[in-house]
Length: 335
Image 1 (cartoon, rainbow, N blue to C red):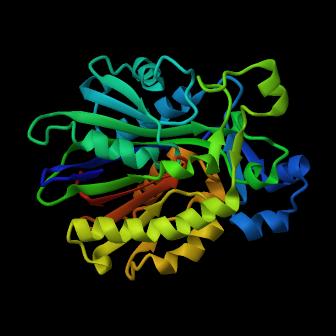
Image 2 (image 1 turned 90 degrees about the vertical axis):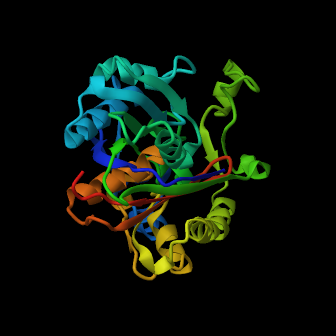
């Protein structure tokens, strides 16, 4: 899927939300037996955050959405589209985005979910950019939110060390000049769908007492094979999106990847061919928040004051499916 056009649509506000329960590596050690040294050496993660018992994905998403709307100076009634990227929806139905719509009072918005797991935010961003009229007063909310603490096996050190809960959001609207969304490239590799999965709970294998007893409703990942996939596909995806939109690698000022694993990302960075790009990592403090990780990192960079007007950003997601997606945008510092 290739999304490209010369239109003035871009990010005019960002926001994020982390729940209150900070999960240190000491607690992960209690559950899994993995040592603090092992966790840091393998992942670079120091802590992650878990949703409270009363919080679901829509709650985290709504809090991030409110922060993004406030940053953009946009009222909820002005939003015409809400896209929520998530693989941990509140329910199989209705869409989590509809719950967010009600929660924030976006009474004029169409709302729907996108499930491309950790690539979901890039997919949703590319879709939303097609729905905003840059010559009008249209605004879209794009939210990445997940609550993986509800689906991980806390005894599995390969996955329990990685995942946390969180949400990030952006507001898309008209921007000036050559600023804004440049284009995206999204690819899927369904022949490797078995590498990351939650086996039970859908129409193929409905939840039952047997699947619950076997833990088949929990998240499973073939970590080594996933790492190999990312090492091959992410550099190729970066080259592809730059070539398609005639952007030289040296023109990229900021690289905001899915925060999967800090050690893995540091190892892959030299292979990306982005000599001037600053890679933004929040994984040490947030853990892997799946679809929430890119907008959380983007909001951290935005509020940290490191994004300058006219700079080129490259966002990159990768994950279950398997999927990989990249998006280019030129930052509007006056938005």
